[in-house]
Image 1 (cartoon, rainbow over the protein chains, first blue to last red):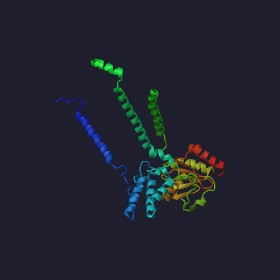
Image 2: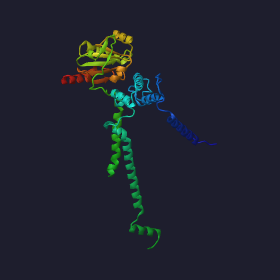
Image 3: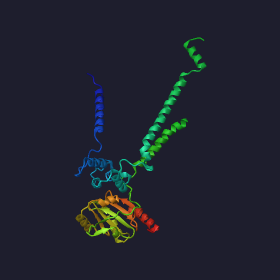
Image 4: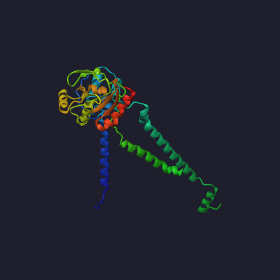
Length: 168
Length: 177
């Protein structure tokens, strides 16, 4: 029963723990900490719109949470305004416009497509294309090298035969 | 070619490092105001002293619009500056009593002094939304035509007054507004 200093069991245990932690973090919804308001709606659809809007609008004060997830005073006021506007029959885009006019791009978790946000929207695609080009370049060069390596010219072939002991 | 191969990763490292380094010191807490160069939102509300106030009560000259509350500790820090400006007659100051209670606001002004020509009572924070306020203290610079020209978020101390407001005011005066 000789056990090494670090047993493979311990490594396995660490790995399993890591996998569990990762899975748990994936399964936990990001902004599930909604504030409890006592708004009343006439239809289910109005309530759904309220939820979506307050999830998609960002709290200007507590900057990493949505309006629905923030306890900040201004978030409370803005949720009340969203409710009022929904009940007054305003459309989602009108409500978003209302917020944008007062708080700017900042309040939108889904920023508008403007000259200033082009990089934000298409930056990842740009990097993907760039990475693809680099990868294909490396791949192509590697293939060229392996091709030229396997082809021997006449003198090299003669030398090879000599070495192998075959007289021409 | 091989020189380029060596310098390209180094160069990209330097570029990324500088970008990230700058990113560390970016001010992401201060939102730019959407109301710059827009007229002050119209209002017909009550002042902290109970009288009715509307846009026509605003000073017909360059003034400060200061968002404050009795719960707001930073407001207490900037209070001496506002008092000085008001006492010296440097610039009229109008208050917005934001998400507060009238009785607490009255007490606060009695205890600390009142630098405001009047304070708009905004208990619900509804007027604050029209201004794009997200927390007291905030101070707006409004020109003689009632157009918002500049906003400062957080404490307005002597340094901020000297370095940000005075140049902005000088610029407005040069324009003749």
